Structure formats: C-alpha cells, structure tokens
Amino acid sequence: MPTTTTPQEYSIGEIMAVAIARQMKEHDGDWVAVGAYSQLPAAALKLARILYAPNLWWLAGGGGAINSSSRLQTSTSDHRVLRGAEYVMNMEDIVDIEMWRHNRDNEKIVAVIGGIQIDKYGSSNMVCVGDYASPKVRGVGTVGLCFGVSFGILYFFTMHHNPKIFVEQVDFISSPGHTAERKKYVQSLCVGPRLVYSPLGVFDFAPETGTMRIRSLHPGVSVDEVQAKTGFEVIVPARVALTEAPTARELALLRTQVDPDGLLGTLRITR
Amino acid sequence: MEVIDTPKRASKVGTLAQAAALIADGSTLAFGGIHSHNGPMALIREIVRRGAKGLKLIANVSAGMPADLLVGAGCVDTLTVCYVGLEHLGMAPRYRKAAEEKRIKVIDGDEIYYVLGLKAGALGLPFVPYPPGHEARDNPKYEPTYKRTTDPYSGRDIIVSPAIAPDVGIIHAAKCDPYGNVVHLGSVVADDLIAKASRRTIVTTEEIVTLESIQADPKRTSIPGHYIDMVVKVPYGAHPLSCHGVYNHDEPALIDYRDADIDAYLRDFVFGPRDHFAYLEKFGIERLLHLRESI
View 1 (cartoon, rainbow over the protein chains, first blue to last red):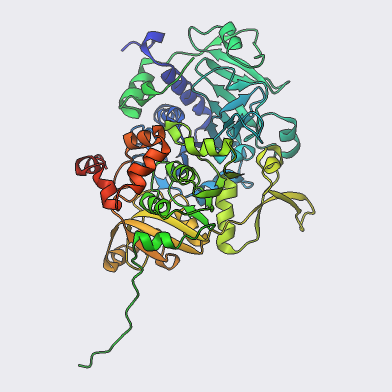
View 2: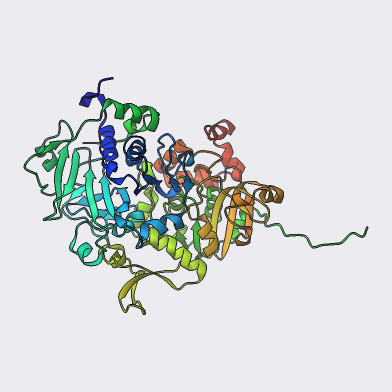
C-alpha cells in the first residue's frame, strides 16, 4: 500500500477529520466533547482512538455515549451511537463534567464545536445574525457553548469557509474567544480557542493579538483565497505550511472502521 | 385457609385524550427526548388537536420537531430555548419564523440554564448560581431572566438563572409498567430531571409491561414510578422521531415536515387522522416496521 496520497484520493472532510485526529495525540488521556451535527469531529475522535490517542475519552453529544465505537451515524444522539459505548451520560452527568472541574487540570476537558458565526478572536455565535432584538436570522440557541468559559481548550470546525461565517465580530457571544472579558472573568486554566479547522485550512490564534492566524492550508488553497473568503484580515505567518495529506493507512481505517457507510463524503462541505 | 382481603394498587394507565386534558391553556410544559429522538409526538399531536393556547414551552435540551410543531400550530406563547433546530436537517422553520416575527417570546437559555434550572425546580431551590466566567458571554447580558445577586459567602456579584418547575412534563419511553416505572432502552437525556421537576409527569410508552418484568431487573428502571402521574400506551408514539432501542427516526417524514406548508401538514397529519392509528396508517405497516431494521 502506498503511504502518500494525492488530493484526488481524499475528500475535504477526510483531510479535516485526519488533521483533527492527529491533533488529539496531545489529548491522549483527556476528555473531549462534540455536539450535534458533528460527524466530522466524531469521525476524527474515533480515528484518534484507533491510531493516536488510545486513552482519549469522548462524548457524542447529548445522547450521552462515552467512547462510542459504532460506525459513524448522521445524528450524534442516534441510539445506534450507543452501541459499543462504555457509559451513557444523562444531562446532569454532562453538566457535571463540562461546567467546571476545579479539582482537576482543566486543560484536560476539551470540546470540538462550531457556530453560525466565528470571529477573529474565536468568539462563537449560535443565537442570531444581525441585531439581537430584531435578528435577520434567529439561530438555534447557545446550547452547550455556554461551557466555552469552562472547557479547558476549544477547537472549532466549520463545514464552510466564507465571510458570513468568519466575521470581524460575532453578533452574539455564545462562547467568548480571546476577548478582554475572557481575560477579566474566566479562570486562566480555561485557555479558550486553540485551533480552527475549516475546509480551507487550519488556523491558530497569534498570542500577541489573540486573533486568527494561518497555521496550514489544505493542498490547492492559496492565502489569497483564504483572505477573500474571510470577513477580517487573517494573520499570515512568514512561512505558510501545507496541511499534511492523510496517509493511506489513515484513509483505510477511516473508510473501513470509522465510517464504512461513507457519511463523511455526503457532508455538504464547501470551500 | 382464610382469604385476606388487601387493597389493590392503582393503575396509572390513561388515554391520550386524558393526558392532553391535563395540559391547561397557559401552563408551563416541558417535553423529553433530544433532537429527532424520544419525543412524545403522539401526545404533542393530541395537544395540538385540542387547540392548546398560550403554552409556556420549555424546549428540551436540543429540541427539533416537537417544539417546531407546537410553535407552528400556534400553541406557544413563550419558548425557553436551549437549542431549537433540526440538527443535520437545518433550521426549525416555524420556530425561526415565529421568533423573527416576534410572534413568540423567546427566553434565551442554554444547557446550564435548562439542566440546572430543572434541578433547582425539582429541589425547590430558588435559583441557580453561576461560577465566575459566565460574565464573558452574552446570554446573561441580553436575556433578562438572568439576574445578578451577591454571593453572601464571598461578597462577590454573581449571575443567577431561575429554577424551572413545569406544570406538566411529558416524556416517551420504550417501556413502562402500569404504576409508572419507566424503562428507557437508550439515552435518558433529561427525562429523569423533567419527571422530578414537573408537578405532573405523563409517560407515553411503546408498551405497557407487567410489574413482574420490572421486578425481574429493577436496575433497568430509568425513572421510578412515584414521579409518574399517567401512563399512556402509544405504539410508535414518537414517530416520526425515533424511540431509542425500538425504531429509528423516519428521516424522509422529517424532511417532508420541514418542507411542508404548516397548515397543510396540520390538516393531513394532525387534525385529519381520527386517532393515532389513523395517523400511523398514513405511513403504512411496511414503512413503520422497516424503521425497526438495524435496531
């Protein structure tokens, strides 16, 4: 089996899932939550437990499955996700672990989340587009993003990269990014947004400004394309890395063990 | 030998009509399940059929069609939101429209507001105090039911949100005995908290099982019967949502609902069918049994 792959051989969803899975090496032994409509991070965490982080604990959304090893499902709270899990949390269990663990190292409680808007500081919005009192779009609600002030580390994933999602400033802060108010009010153990995975690349936050910076771009993506599709000025590092392509081994495991039904390929991911 | 006459334990079994009659206009109603799973849909259709008005609806932690249908049918006055949407199927269209047109009052909660609010409601605690940090997000700034108070121990200014004590809670589960002992065959989510926090709780269930089957494995009981006021047998009572452990959600039916004209939908699927079985007949035995595949 060849070990290198070309962009023709994998989907955007697959390169994103593999990138998140590799990042989970840092979280071997930690506890990671995903929410609803989260096939992409769910696939990543399943792959991570097989290849990179066998001691990772993960929660499949409000259905409560811990360490689900079922084939990937469309809805994270589908009862088929419960198969091969080790425990099923109810909502009290979930709040107990996500709200605040003052007796543990908080960096070990991690979430991979999204938003209808994400701004340059990594604040995320699920509530409204436009003025809160008279919104252009009424969103679904803050749901578990209230734990953005108590999770140790936040990762973001988006299935689209455009100026409507990546905005200068969110219209409503469901979960605060690297804002002045986070510095003022939130425990320093909760470091907030670490990385953003989009269909164009992987982004981090420059320590000096707390704003989004290119970490790597997926094959075939240019800095100009990212800038044109982002609603604020993205920080461009001196050297722009290329997101490492999935290996044949990663793709084989993803397609045969994690997602044999090929759901990742059916996601509406747009560049 | 002398026969000793002992009193008989009272059954809590009722009908959908009796259950819906417990939900008075203007009352606070909570429902169980999550997303497209375990919602008490047959009872919700019955509530719509009865023409309930002015409900203060406490949407479940991640609510989809149950909240959207009650809003679309004009039954809801105030909606407490943690999440209302259709997950991978997109936005919940009637909720979105009603909120944008300000035809309903939205209370912008979240998981803490909802879960610990119910916990406080269950225990009679006056409110939920928040640890530091939540000042950095917008729900406590924009949603007026969050308040500030002084922590009498530290003297610090803290955020609080209200206790949630619904008048009626309605949940759906795979099994229940006549005395209200509930068995979930999948996620409980917050159904247990709803039962503890609500003044009255109604369970709709796929099947009513014997007390003996509950006693054979009491560790499987997910909610003890003393919290339950009425048990209604409704096979496929969560359709088109799933009932965990019994059948999958009917995704094409959910998409049809999402895309339908709400008045046509209500006519065809809520007011039209004379009862729950007539509703099920619109889908047919073959399709309904197929939903049990891969369980």
